[in-house]
Image (cartoon, rainbow, N blue to C red; front, top):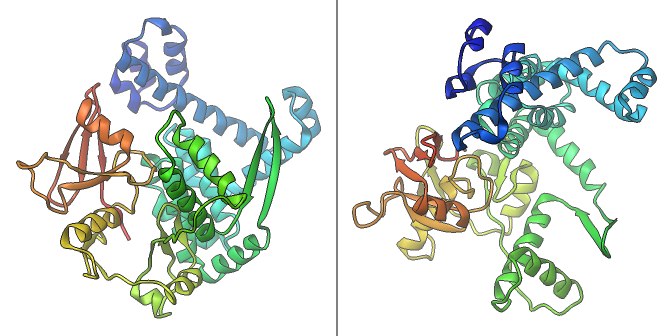
Length: 388
């Protein structure tokens, strides 16, 4: 969109497609922010984030040529170590020129760009980084920070499986527990653990919290109390399973493609094969789009198998746009009996989005499982089944 056109335009959704510019900033500066409608607030937020992304691009590009970091640190009232680390970031981003350009265009924010940089920075060659960027460049603007991080992790593991496993073992050696004082007589206890064990601990606490009596406590409070009960030896014994999806080729050692740990994302092939040695296996057949299509029979009744397949097809993540919560409830997109109990019409949602879908949001589904959401402001968003 041309800058000249922006000058004569009112605040409309069409502006959300515009690249950052002085005219766009002038437009926002002249608005009465308290008088905006609900839909205009969404538009203004999008435009403000575009301008912020462009400002980050300018700062990083300029910082790349700064030699005296002490001078700059004094000018912007930041520790010199912070400025130096920021300068290191600019060097890493040289290897991601197209994603960097999306930052300039306001299509990608710095936080998501850093998520990619943190995962590709240890790849052994620029060629491999470019290979990952090739796959991400179209999808990145439409992914959340968490989704982009998971997608990049999987691509890095595919591009350099041996190095990925080596980095995992190095990171595993740095596992630790830390405590940080907080105000008001509280403290934060943090454990850095391998993903599989961390997932097991979390699921164990969730199961413990679910068994606690109904009272005024929130779920977070119950999990915290369950943690203390279990750590202090007051919790009951419980079996916990983690769900890992691995290709047959990787299971047989023919490839080193990463596996998918439910609720976390990609894990190394070696870790997945180690888990599979003592695990219960279930066959999953994929369609031509690499979406889960059929799940093998085991000991569950058909209704349970279909419910499990619904979760697998979504990567066990809520099917609402941008949501990264685990599936908590099942839903017929087209309500039963008009909508049938079939794989495309069944979706797994978190409790929050399940309520929204029935109260204020609308959803329709295509035969291939693509889900179309419409918000109260008549904005449309699309989600697709997880691609394995």
